[in-house]
Length: 271
Ligand code: SF4
Image 1 (cartoon, rainbow, N blue to C red):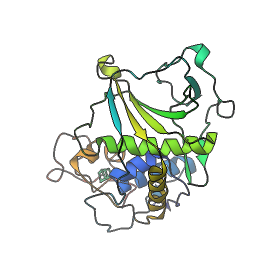
Image 2: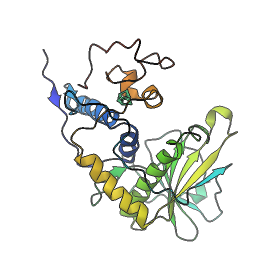
Image 3: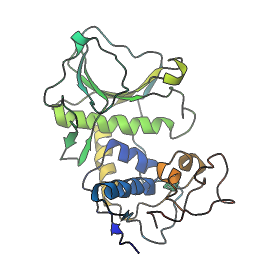
C-alpha cells in the first residue's frame, strides 16, 4: 500500500481559500491536499481527522456588508482611469482599457506576479487593479457569469464581499495605498452581456479587522470540517473528483439528492 503523506499546514491563505472555507472548510482542505500531491509527486492526505462530524455551517463568521452596492449594467471606466495591474496568468479578462490607458506597474508586470501580504499572511492575484483619476486604487475580480447567479441565495453576495475585501488588502500591502472599495465584475459572456453588472464592496477599518480575524480562523483550524449541502456539494471540485464521502450530492449525479444512491469512491484523499 502506498504511503500517504499528511498535508502540511499552510502559513498563508488566498482570497479563494477564504471563499472556499466560508462554504466548506473540508473542500478547502481537499484542494490543498490535491495541490500538495501535485507539487510533491506523492499522495497527500487531507489533515481533517478521521471521524470528524459534519457541520451545518462554516465556522467563518460573515463579513460586514453594509454599503455593498449591486449595479446592473456596464462598469463605468472614466477617461482618466488607468490599468496598473493585470493578472498575466488569466487569458479571458475583458479589455476595458485602450492601449494608451494601460500603465502596468513594472514591479508586478510579469507572469506569476503574486501580491503578498506577510503581515496578514495573505497572497493572491486580483484580476485587475484600476488607478482612478482621484488617486484611488481599486481591485477588480472578474467573473464571466451573469450578475444574478446566486443573487437570491444568502451566500451569493457574501462570496463577492469576501473576495473583494481580501483583494483590497492585497492591493494595500503591495501598492501602499488602501483602496476605498473593491469591485466584482460580471461579464455574462454566455448571454452576450445581457446581464452584465458589478458589485462594489466598501473597504475600511471594519472590513480590515474582519479579514485579520478570518485569516486567523482559517489558519488555526486543525479540523477543517465538512459542511455538506446540496447547493455547495453540487459545485465542489473534490466532489466531482470523487474525493468526499460526506457529499450531499453524488459525483456525476449533481441533479439527484445524494444520500439514497451515493457510493463512496474507492480512492479519495479525505478521511
Ligand atoms: S462534497 Fe460537499 S462536504 Fe464534501 S468537500 Fe465538497 S462541499 Fe464539502
